[in-house]
Structures are given as C-alpha cells and as structure tokens.
Image 1 (cartoon, rainbow, N blue to C red):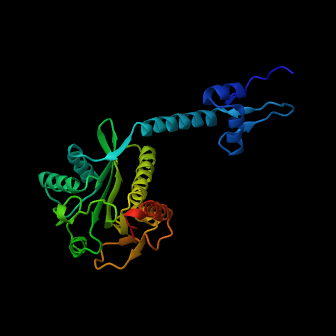
Image 2 (image 1 turned 90 degrees about the vertical axis):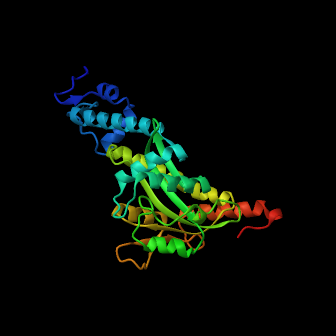
Image 3 (image 1 turned 135 degrees about the vertical axis):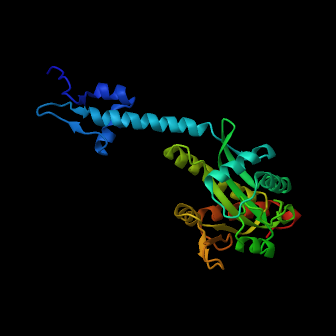
Length: 287
C-alpha cells in the first residue's frame, strides 16, 4: 500500500520525530497521555499526529531544556562580604518592611554576622548576580534577647534589629543552637517556571546544609520561622514545621523540633548526628 501523505494539519510519524527530536515510542506515550491528538484513517496501519499539538509540545520541550540549561549554570554557595550588598538589594525586592534602615547600617550588621558565623547567608548566583537567598540565624537556645527581637516590629532582614555578633552562635561540634530561618527567596523578575526550578534547587541545598550540621556534630534544639505568605506557610508545613501560639496577632510562628519531628529532613539530620556521635565516642558523645 503506498505511503499516504499527511492530511492538512497533521504530521507523519517521521515528521513528528524530527520536529520533537523524540523516538516513536516516546511520541506514542504523549498520544496515550493526551498531549498529541492521533488520527488513524480507516483501513490504514499508520496514523498521523496533530500538527498543532506537536508544535506546542516542541515549544514546551524547548522551553524546558532552556530552563534546565539556565538552572545548571546557577551556583549555590555561602555568601561572602562582597555579596552582602547584593543580598540586601535582593531583600528589598522580595520584602517590604515597616521599620527598615539604610543600606550602610545593614551591610555592617550582616557583615558582622557572617564574620562571627560564615554560614548565616546562602545564595544562588548566576553570572555573578545574586538571584536566590536563604538566611538562617543561629542563636543560643531559648535566648530572651532573640525572643524579644522576634516579638518586636523591627525586620530581621531590613531593619536595625537588636541582634549582634555576640548573639550569633558558631557551628561547632557539641554546640547547641536554635536556628531562625529568616528567609528563602528567589528573584521575582525571573520567568515563573525558572523561579520554581531555582526555588526547588535552593530548598534542596538548604536541606543539605541542615543535614550537614548533624554530620558535624552540631546540635539543633529547634528551628523557628515566620510564615508571611500562603506559599511561605505551605513551604514551612511541607518541611514539617507546626504553628504555635504567638504573642503577636499579626505574626504566624512555626517551629520544627528535631527531637519530635517525623519530617524527612529531621530524620536525615538525626541519623547524621547519631553517626557523628558513634564515630566520636572516644571524644565524648554529643547529645
């Protein structure tokens, strides 16, 4: 039987394979999943594939591959002194603060924090531009000074909050710390799908840093964070945070307790800390 030319608005399998750069098996999967309309004329063994659907899928795949390439060139690292001005600028894009202060004051404060503990601020950079940030303040567990700062209305990120380098704990084996997850954010001017992909990468890397503290013998008493948006609250709940009663009616406070939480990140942290303890028995167990 002679090969039938594709009807108007349709591709042959060969044409669809070339357009999508996919195998025939993968194209059939997209047909099964409803992504591509398939036309099989009566009496024919070979059918045809909707040109509109194939072209749309080709555009989606091209965009996805472009996002993959863009995400791959993004680097996750600890922020250095030279990154701090860009970190503050990104925070001004991400957040509004009723009681904010000037950049010079913030640069001095943030720089002093990372000089005490270099791992306070983590960033995603693309072509030397800071496009993502996660800030975690390690303090003394149950610190009254921290509690007072949290109850106040001065922004931790953009205000002259009363947290000094003396209040910042270092990550040393056996040291007990309370972590305040102050932010996880991605530059909002990026394309939406890329933001989601980079956000997932930033969250994954942040989770790795928590587990790494266990590997180093750092004892996390609890992790606190404030949920300011619906997406932020969903993210905290996904991590395993639970909401607690807080003195400020305009603030929703969430806590993650490593001793009690069954969240995967806490399971991984506890396992890492237990492994550290088991391999450092000669030096004394960390608990």
